[in-house]
Length: 194
Image (cartoon, rainbow, N blue to C red; front, side, top):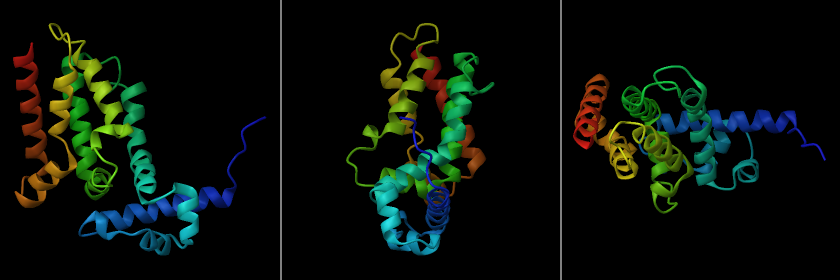
């Protein structure tokens, strides 16, 4: 049996909900202050539409995060340098971390909401597993790098949303300085690990 296409109104409602959630998370003092009722009101839909479409608040946050992350994922899997698969690993590993850092800077409250969504460990989330596996595989392409598993975890810890928020909001670290410091840190780790 062929897969049924979603109804046009369901697609519109989904996009309205994702856009509303995006706006609310971007403008909230803290992600926990954004409720399903707030999102439904902002999107102009009933709360039932949210629960039917996303299951719960965590499901909605995951869907929004994945939707916003999709362009980067495509660039990593199919794109050109420096993120794409044809890039030398010594260039690609720092580019992957920089792309993730920039994503978390651009979607800071959404990233925090996902990490704080109460799903247990942020390390068990699908997106974390994908980033870890991708970075680990790139690291193992480097000469002398037999196992990049721990190093991938350690490098990804440097771009956790709570750390990014602390460094930017509380310490006042400018975006470009943070990017430069991450690049320098990554270069040191990769140089020492070889």
